[in-house]
Image (cartoon, rainbow, N blue to C red; front, side, top):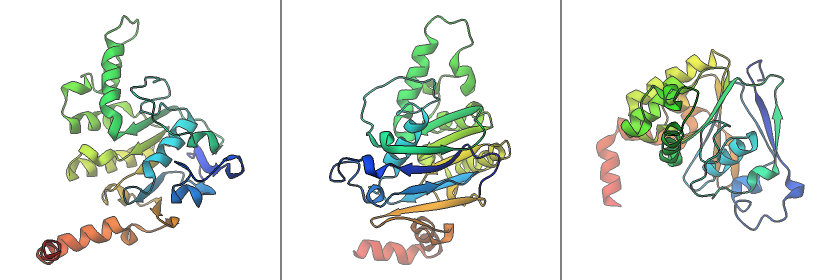
Length: 250
């Protein structure tokens, strides 16, 4: 599975150092059953129902790598409210032989805070170009939510990078999700590696990847067509009237 573009090969949980599995986040089933996670050199998906611990796991991976808990590059250090868990302290990252040239932790729920921080830094005196130039030259707050998300993918991601994306589809239309999938492919061809948490069957469709599905029993590998996201969406689109009737009768 490993290739030259693999910057992060594996994540191991230092279980022997965890004082107790009775409190958050160690009481999550995915953590209680977690030993190690082998990452695909191109695209790794972490999917599952709400409450399974996807965002907690993604946050811990990002912070263990050196990213700001609220998102951005490793150079961002702002904190609107420190709510991230201590899970990253118990993670051992097994890195590849090559270092990424670029990197970004994209977190949909705190993207507004990231945009605000960029505007604040651009308002201060600086010898360099405005930070917003790396996001298309326009303040992210002056774009729609979906446009600002899209700007980061198109303008900020530069290739040969490690990109950790937590629910990037949150403000994107299906058409834009397909455009992001094409952008992911373009960046993979530029020796990038992605770790993506998503509910979108469109974004899960990258062919050269691995999908880890989080359940109440832990974590398992599934094909796209075996995920609940794909199955339910397909059933709804293929038999909308019957699905609606069942939903409304319940």
